[in-house]
Length: 425
Ligand code: PMP
Image 1 (spheres, rainbow, N blue to C red):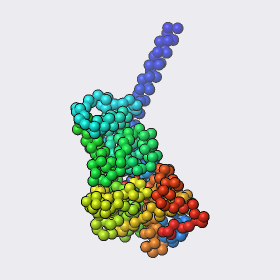
Image 2 (cartoon, protein in one colour):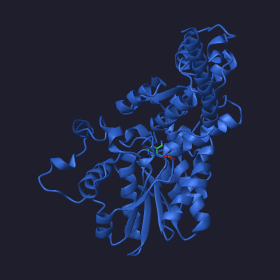
Image 3 (cartoon, rainbow, N blue to C red):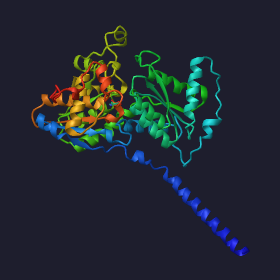
Image 4 (tube, rainbow, N blue to C red):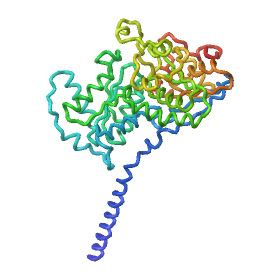
């Protein structure tokens, strides 16, 4: 009996040893990207057959909503996070499969005692976010939602804590999704960018505070000014669009940070100079005037009420009151601008659902209206490409909410007795 148990022990130890060796090779595997990351990009470009038939011009949509995070922002979030890791601003991704909070995150004591209420609340938010950190790194961003969702997922699998500052006029589901993805969410009133309490300014200060006062390796992602955003679109997304539709005559897109439009626009300008690049602008945004008349309203004019701020529009994630660094990268190549009303976007979204089976969000509906406007200006047989940024499922409480649309003084297309074509058709 004694020798049998000795053999068993020997056998058991060998098994354990083998398992450990196996684990070591699995650790090497973590240097490859996760499943999520491997699914980013290479999205389909699809023709809208019914719309193209009506227009006698081909309209194609780049299905950015088919990225794993349900949004084209996956690409920019990945590029900006990688840049921060490579520059050493935040630690490299977690190298082993671990659910434990990193020691780095818990052992570094703050070097500063909060002096006032703001600092106290910053510290609370940062520590709450840091509970999810396995690398000791913290990623902070001010976002209207989509970028936050992509960042939160990437942070969860790369091991960083994620703190998202969100304006209070965004659909509730975005907040729920962010929290489910382990991000810490801070909701603040949506005020002008010139106000220090604008969500982007708060996010910048939070990252500075974490770095300077709490010794936490933190990065302010800064999607509006961080050119890793526009460059990933010019190197990758633009190349995909051209490979999928080499003879396109126009590319049409709205601007949130300007990264997608400026990135794809510059690539196309270089490789297909005859292609028109068209900006779609929602009500309240300053870019239409900038492109058409060469003047964007200044901040002082905005303060004096000359420019309605973008929260006047139904469209989420698009419209700007300034030229960001990402947009500036490709501003030169924008040939034309189209102003699209909220009602046109609502009508178009319902038409797309009923005719093409595409359930899209507000910015995508505006993009398609812009594409139709551009197509009418081109000769029959031309090809226009635009982008479906995300699905209607992210917009249930606002854009796809009957009562909310009526409260905004707009029409809900299906309330009418007879189906009508959207005005742009
Ligand atoms: N649509 C949605 C839903 C968005 O969230 C965004 C980005 N905020 C955009 C479009 C615009 O993309 P970009 O930031 O590249 O201009």
